[in-house]
Each structure stands twice: as structure tokens, then as C-alpha cells.
Amino acid sequence: MKTLFITLLALAHGAVHGAESPLGEFVGQGPACYGKLSLSSDALAWRTTFSQCSGARYKVIAQASTPGGQVSTIAIDKPELCGFSAITLESDRKDPLVWVITGYRTLDDVQNTQLAAHERLVCTMRKEKF
Image (cartoon, rainbow, N blue to C red; front, side, top):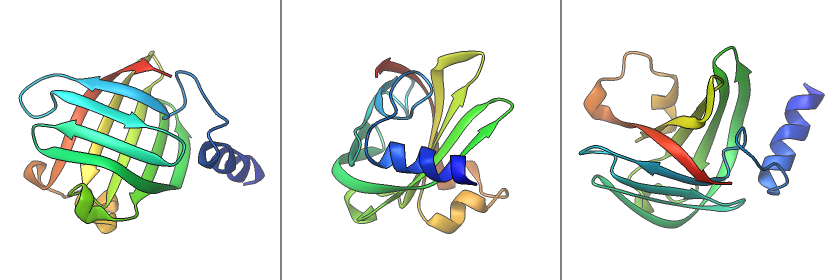
């Protein structure tokens, strides 16, 4: 528990960098995901076919290490700026430059395993900058 708190605190202050950190720039391909997600220590911008989000403040609300990689969940302070209330970022332990980024309309949707595909935006993205 103490390690989780220190990790969250480090992320909130931008002290954690590198492939395993969700901070950085991610590039997506394909019809729905073509674009870029930029995540700094206190703001994000996500531009895709279905999202035009810029300068939104966020908070890290959860982070976990799984057998597959790292998973971070962030809550967006003003979801109306992005069309999303929450975003999860999941790294791939086999290729730490590959991340699955998912945008959710509500915070409750993050926990909803029955959520239909059209109720979220799921993008496999490549981390370009740390």
C-alpha cells in the first residue's frame, strides 16, 4: 500500500518517466484512433477522429501492476472538454512502447465489464516520447 501511494505521488508530480510511465506522447493509427495523446504531469491532450481534447487537467485515481503490464486510470477534471470522464492507460510488458488507451464517458464505465464497444474509445497506441 505504501508503494502504491509513493507511485501515485510520483506520477502526480511528474517524477516517473520512461516506457512504464504513462507520461509522454502516444501515436495512434486506424480510422477511430488516428492521432496523438499527450500526457504531462498535470494536463492531457487527446486528438483523434472522435476526440478533440486539449489542456484538460486530470488526477491519477488508480494505478496497478498486472502480469501484462502497468494500468493507470485518470479522471478528467472537466469531462466536457474531452467527451470523456476517465481514461485508462495499459502498457504491454512484452513491448513497453505499446499501450492500450481507453476513453470512458463516466467514471462508473471504467468498472463496467459489460460496456458495449460503441460506449468507449479503445486505441492501441505507440509511445513516441517519454
